[in-house]
Length: 169
Image 1 (cartoon, rainbow, N blue to C red):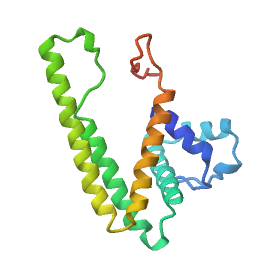
Image 2 (cartoon, rainbow, N blue to C red):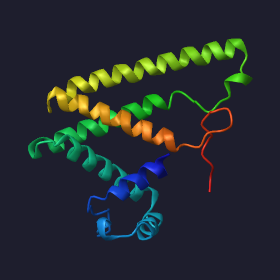
Image 3 (spheres, rainbow, N blue to C red):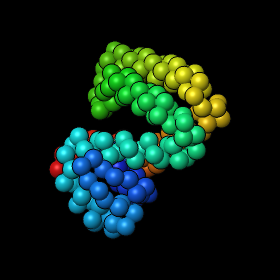
Image 4 (cartoon, rainbow, N blue to C red):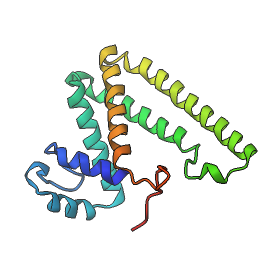
């Protein structure tokens, strides 16, 4: 999933400089981009992806230059908290193989994690409104939903419609 999102962000291109590199992403063909990305360390890839994501969000929301640093820090904090909460639920299981008690426990856990995600989103929506207008916060959450939808369209599914776990190369 991360590879797909990363590739999408690269394709959009922002003419950004990666850590320790000076590439013009817009002028590179996809094969060149892939080669450069494959030669980056995992930390450099993560930093580059974060930079692309942040610049895409800043451009999409048209954040005032004076608010960019504060908003970027807040947005990155929000994303990290969401990841931390999501990591509390392992969705890589087949519900049909669970006993009734296991399924009930898993369902309850999913509700609890979902509520934590919602609570975190509300908390950061309030914080973000101290930096950017409410309309832009709403637009941010809309764009997150659209990206999630696009990503789920690209995920491989098995014959039962379940998302298959990613394969290790």
